[in-house]
Every structure is written in C-alpha cells, then in structure tokens.
Length: 247
Image 1: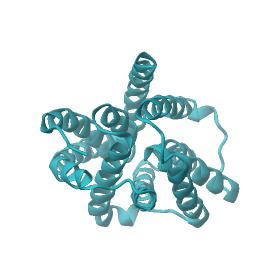
Image 2: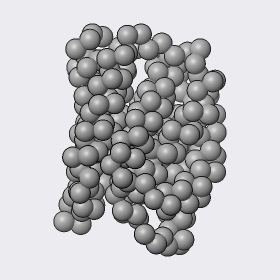
Image 3: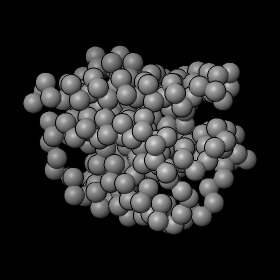
C-alpha cells in the first residue's frame, strides 16, 4: 500500500485532539481517532495505528500510575477480552471501508449514549459484570480497536474515586491495546505503512498526552467525566452523520 504524505496534517489533527482527550479522561483515543483515521487510510491500517499509539503511550505512563491502580479480581474480564478480541478480528477480516465506517459510527454513538445514561444503570461489581464487560469490550476491540465504552461504563460505575478510576481505565486500555495488536497480527493486518504512520504520529501523540495530563491535574477531579462524555457525543453525532452521507 502506498501512502500520501499530504494526509499527515489531518492525521496529526486527529491525534492531538484524541490524545488530549485520552490523557484527560483515561479513555477515548480510539473513539475519537479511529472514525477520522478510517476516512484517510484503509480500516485495518486505521485500527493498527490507533492501537499502536495507545499501547506505547500507556506503557510509558504506567510507572507513574501503578500506585493508583486497583484492579481487584479483573482476571476474568481480561481473559474474556483477549479471546473475544482475537475471534472478532478474524471474523471481521474482510470488512470493507464503507461498512467499517458505518458500523464504527454506530458503535461510537451507542457507546456514548450508554455513557450518558450510565447514572441510570445499576451496575454492581461482580464476576458476571467482569465477564460481560470483557465480552463487549473484546467485540469492539477486535472490530474497531475501541474497547473503551463497555470498560469505562463498568469502571465509572464501580470505582467512585476519580484518580483510581482514571488509572484503572488507562491500565485496561494498555492491556486491551496489547490484545488488539496481537489480534491484528494474527489476522494479518500489519504492513510497513503501519510503521511509518506510527513514527510520524507518535511525537504528536506525546505532545497531546502531556497537555491532557496537565489539564487533568488542574481540572480533572471535578470535570473530567462530563467533558469526555460531551466531546465523545459530539464526535458520535458527526461520525454517524458522515457514515450515512457516505452510504
């Protein structure tokens, strides 16, 4: 696959916005970036780029966060997430770009709608809840590299402390990104284009991550959930509208 270097400014714009959102809230990079990436590069390239950026950035951040991580009894969630990520990546191997954009837009709208209605959902910490969150996140991880909505809804509902909640979400996003990359490798998604795209976008990702972390340290305790949900819902509406228009 050849790549038009003139697309980099558009990719950078998507990366900076999505990385600030991810650093501020702990989630949302793929939700914000993948639908935009998919308009610029093939779907499989888009999900590999997103997962690669999230994995490396989260890995660099983990040493600073590990004291706040409290993922008790998350083994079942993580195991289900791995298996379902691989199965879904293989099932959706031949999905074309139009269908990908359409379904990614619908998944984004559904995820944001659930985040908005989270306060009305009586979710309790349980083994069944762990398995269900892992199942839904695995489907979205293998298909779109977007494991966030199911995991975020579950963690926001079961962890009241914002610092621990953000640390837990970033840690699970790190694990999910690793599983996504493994699943994509098994499915044969990788090419040299992925390497050049990652190298071209990673410095922008680091800049956005630093800015988002600074904003969280100042405003995150009171505002990070509300800001994230509002931004993602706006992206959801525009993505679904764009998907319908493209059809």
